[in-house]
Length: 341
Image (cartoon, rainbow, N blue to C red; front, side, top):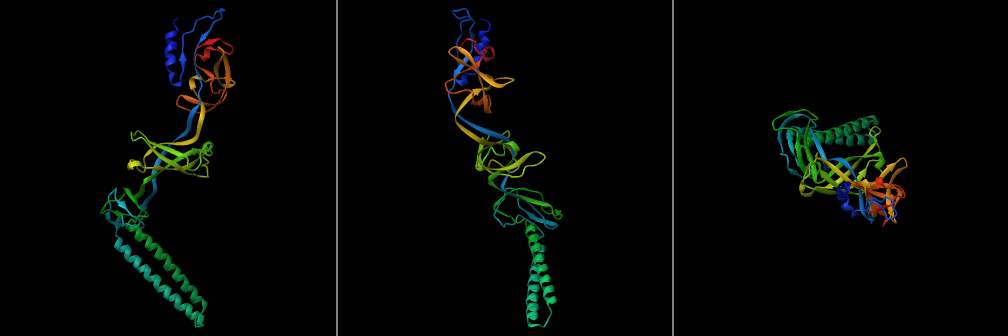
């Protein structure tokens, strides 16, 4: 029989589903043709449905510092330096800005003293209320200048806003920079944040705290575990997606901010799913269906399909435990055909 080698080769592709195949007599005892197929009895098994999305990493705390005012770079730390909150990571003429800060503080002290003096005179009736209003405005202006001077001084030292590691720098020692120039980037890297865009249809598929697996593109370092931290409530009107933030445990510090990879989010776990090979699913104008064997006769079952993974798909309805599913040769077995497997 010339088709047997091809049939045998095809049968090997479905052995992972526990199929068994046998040669069939070309004709039954009553002279009717019998179609040889490969079939398997269905056994429910556990199945996890994962969504896959491209992702880019950043520190769980991540900040690019900028120069509040221009000047000459006196010093800057090396990339990889660990810093605590408040540590100076650079020096951009910080002595000059420290003096400006001291002057701003003195102005606050002076205007506060003047405000107190005028307030006392107003209460004594020796001066009018207009003098008090002016003294209050002068004091408030001095306070604003102090806050600005303090911020400029902190920026001139690239003051770390939190504990972290310097992951990059944009300035060099002895160079002169303008106000607003990026200086250093500091991040907390024991845990990283992966940013992904969730399609609008997927927004209700995941709950906060959902299990996450992250894999770096082209890396042999394996998977990194994590969880879903949050999903934005607002959807972008152009892309119809919402931003989701995932927290990834940075095992052995192998990951870094800016790296790209694939994030898998666990949608649902099925404890007893009917899982079938996609090759066993046929389609016509009425939708997907499959062929089963009942007492040696092929029967058609209309299917409702669920999630898929690789070369398998979950059947939500249409097949049940112990059904004998035709996995190879179903396209040759119509409703009522005698089959042997």
